Amino acid sequence: MDFNGMRDLESEKQICAGHCRVSRLWLGASVTTDKVLHLDMILMDSKGNDIWVHIPPVLQEHFKALLQEQEVYIIKDYEIHTTQLKYRPIANSYIMTFNRTTTVQRVPDIPSIPTFKFSFTKASEMKDKLGQIIILSDVVGELVKHSNLLTTTNLSRKTTRKELELKLIEGDVVKVVIWGRVITEFDKIVKPAGDQPIILVVTAVSVNLFKKMYNQSSPCMLSCPHLPPFLNFRCLNCWDYMWIRTARYRIQLEVEANSKSATFIIFEYEGKRFFGPTANELFNRTGQNYEEPPADLLKVVGVTKLFHVKFKPNLYSDAQPDFTVLKILEPEAT
Image (cartoon, rainbow, N blue to C red; front, side):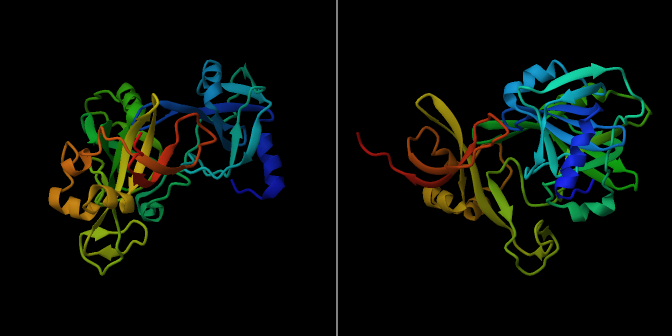
């Protein structure tokens, strides 16, 4: 839908002024910790209009017990406002938020209300969606194969993933990486089917180049130096070819102080000052494929330092925010 000021806000409020169907319902969880951060869903009305609904963490257990996918409800006392959030599952600049006065009443099914609505991305359109994290994409295809469970270690943190290959309608094969709780859902619905093809709909995905120079097991993030073209490397931002690759630090630390823990992130400048070698020097010396971080990085584990940090709180989650390290200092002697 396209929206235009207050007129559109009023029309958006009409989506759930009557009956609406819970088209999709899911728990948003952290990829790295698998901690549930919020409860989200997509509501649809009889005209096929849809809206993303965000339920705050303090209310998620209450509404999780009341709502079921594909059921029809009358919902009252909610809030609708524009959103600047990234990673939107649908192309809608408005979001609905539940509060403590919101009520939901389940009613008999209304067949005229659609069950699902997707905007499938074709292979020919994926170039235009590279790096798009505002509005995510949907894809549909035949499951060609999938990997076993893969584990990645980044400092003391482990993540799990599975890699799928989907054959799209146009015949192109794309790789899809799923994480955390999505793996559990995948294992529930995908069973050996003999000679019968398995068709998957994968929603809310971001599009990236499979051959981009980034490896989840590496503490380095590779960026484009905007240099003359070569055959192997291409920048996801400018789409230009480049003849060298440049590594940059993005290191996540789990720190503790006074029985509290938080995630600190160190980028290139402070990483170079603290660890010694640049990320590029470290990358060229050790490579990117290793199970354990290089010794140069492990020296920070167990060390007490004074961190000058900045952070931006997440108003839609009770999860701990990430802190960006601006400077690392020696603690004052006591």
